[in-house]
Length: 456
Image 1 (tube, rainbow, N blue to C red):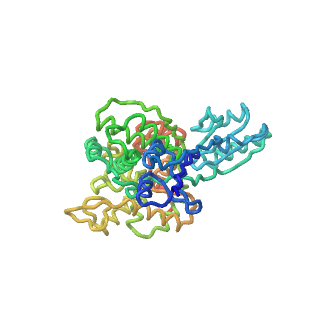
Image 2 (image 1 turned 180 degrees about the vertical axis):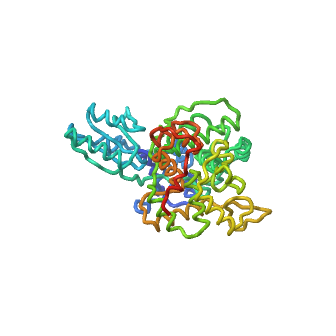
Image 3 (image 1 turned 60 degrees about the horizontal axis):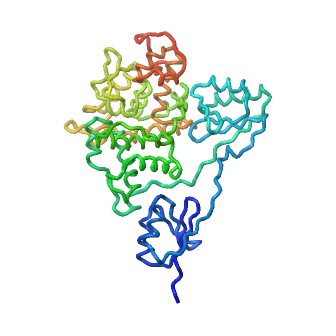
């Protein structure tokens, strides 16, 4: 009796493989990325990536029966398939921090949307998006009511069908990022954070094409990988953009090729509004924080508008109590700047330094010595703030960067000129600072840290 031929069916983006158990064949199937055994159907599921079907045909040869291909019907997105009545406005809160609005032509409502900062119109899908905030949502809701329309509000359903990132255990002969790539990043003085982001992104790219040599990778592979990130991995726009930047760095800086535009669907970054604490919420956070060092850390970040990386790099010498300024060296963009030193923060810092006696860095980690001073960890700072936010009973999604946004917003509310806020934050472009809205007219010497206005 002849053995039953091995069956292969192609269904959209999946390859279904039915075969008798054989150690050599199983070993081969496991080399195909993201292949998995379906114990209910007794078959293997393999992604229909370019080259996978050809590799299966080559491996099984004459043992393979005819490949069965099933026709698939293209599916529309949920919003595209929805029918919106002419008197309805579909308002969807997305996971990316924006509000999507779908409605028939209405000049008045369109004008309202255009008055909101960072609005966008998607020409392909025929919908508007704006940054999510309770204020903007209420503004849109009010206008819809005034126009006699009906608002249908929904929250975007989370897509759980996401392909996980490939790990060194998923494929044989996993390739590490070339040393020359890391050395070039260091040579060009990229920040530690950028290096930590670029290296795993480039590793994912080269291992996605594990059967290809580095010399064979080019524009076609960049385009294919970009589509994979969007369609299979379901990554965010910012993640996709950073992945492309990491790949471009290899071709342009490491290999020395000319700067090139890769014709991929590189997404527009949807603008979102940062979460901001009220002054009352900042007071609550500081009041529930009892440890002197922890209070000093949170006060310094908020009162000077620092990034978390700037805070851990501060040295004792950077605190200028005579000019009431803090020097921030080699911040984002490799630029130095000065920001303000709050009188209250200075008093807390003096108490903290007297008690903790740091050697070089203003805030040092465990095991720090005079010979080898160690910076405080960013994860510890995040943990300090998370505990304080929880203890204060604040439900907002608060990160360390929220304190920086709150600093800028509170300065603006107290009448500080936006141009000086730009200088204090170290923004290269005024457009970045305009998210905090209006421009007023006060000089640098008139700026008082919002910390000094808090009743604590």
